[in-house]
Image (cartoon, rainbow, N blue to C red; front, side):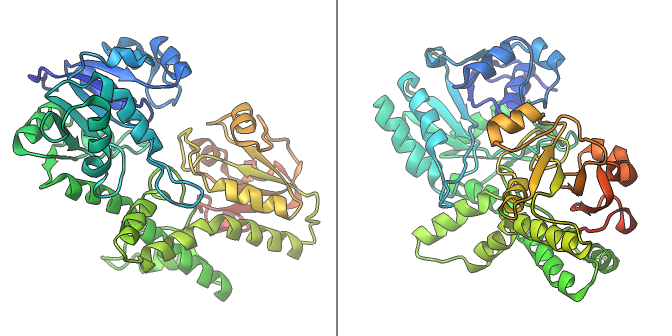
Length: 426
């Protein structure tokens, strides 16, 4: 990896799945970099050489030259600031820019003329220049665009995916002027081996990021709707998709739950901005409604299958295997498995969650669900394999069935065991 020639002293704000890998990569490239996070336990763990997210090995964390801090005073004397904080949505499905504005408030007192601020968080077009810029200017007394240089470079991190790491995926960069864009390139070029794409404007880069996951959301919504239709026709959706997939240009999407910090959230940033402009985006919101309803559909389908087998529903015990938003990671943000658990509760079913990537104590304390460390053999009236963790794949359907009573229903949401390996699948 090339060594940097940039003289910027960098601070990365937000040390989650995006910020921490970036911090370590910048340090490996030779930058003087500070990783900043407002959560003291996170900083304490990193200073002890451990990533609480479980994405980066203790050896790599311990070996880094990067420093970590939760003290905003340590942001002084930094010349470039990279904001990599979450951009969630509210209960009303509106963008929550609180973390971004909080990061701007932390930065602003320490800005000096010529400072560079790069936003990596997913936002709608206009946020960097129309919201972050004025916030930074108000907090620092400097002029955004002249004394403070703004840039945008959207993250493309995929938790649990070692193949598509930050270094191996082309990265978009954009800035307010050509000189600043060159400066941004000097920061990222030593880190991103796959190369950089220089967008024509910050708004273009913001729009590109927000449609990446919106497109994927709609493709999954389409096959989820196929699944809803085929269930009424008595057809196996995955068999239909397999047959259709023999055509050279058929896209290989599968039905499933759509959660996490990207696909289930980003479309609402675009639709919010569209509605600000007086346009109601019908297709995008229709896709969101379909995907957000799939958890309830799974629970209702299971209840019907139990009733057909004369399994009493009220007080029944159901084992839900997996709670994270995707396989092989510990990220539970916006997990739609929560919808399954909630819907089962409405039917007076006792749902017990098992997820080796999260742990029972965290599931209980952070999510308020009934959780088990080890499922009890022969205890459950039904089992839902909600997430295709490698541990579940390795167990296989026969071993998983031993957790159930005789005749228990096995619902393999992801279709990992084949048609004969389960009673139900999407």
